Amino acid sequence: MNKTQLVEAIAQKTGLKKKDAEAAVSALVDATVAALADGDKVQISGLGTLAVKEKAARTGRNPRTQATITIPASKSATFTASKTLKESLNK
Image 1: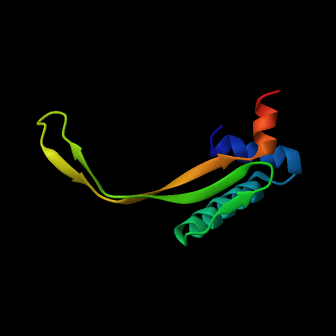
Image 2: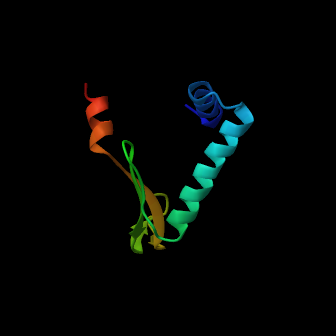
């Protein structure tokens, strides 16, 4: 499901116009990104938790030249499914 399909599904379930549903989805995405950028967790009951995970700098190897390279530290978003979501997927 992509964003357009999500907007259509929300519009159908809630009776909102597509324009209003798209605004709601965009607001959710913007608020989630802003919270994660601030280092906060985002917990959505029944869905799961989004959090930021920091990866330390490490050394790696270029497979073509076998040269040692330094891979810089980075941050990434992680998702942990809620118990409710896991149970609904495993029915």
